[in-house]
Image (tube, rainbow, N blue to C red; front, side, top):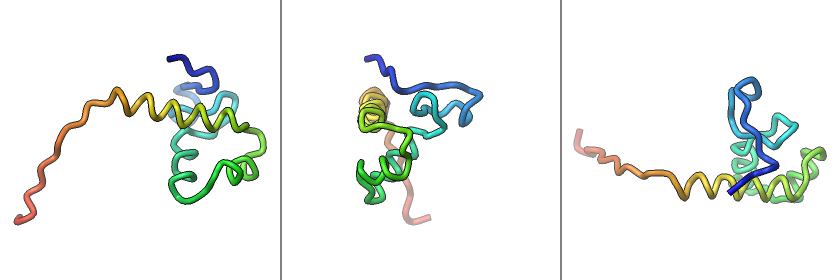
Length: 79
């Protein structure tokens, strides 16, 4: 899957995936949405991004998580 609105550049935000042409990371978008914000909030807070940018950031994160290998971490609660 190709993401035309997401860029990764080691010189911008230490290489974190960002909305192309901005310093707004996919991580920030997910953090704001997960914290109770909605798309309208993001559009108001960051007027230089679009609804399509936000939706692509969500789809990008979803694609990354789909392909992530999950390792079970066992924690000894008695130690």
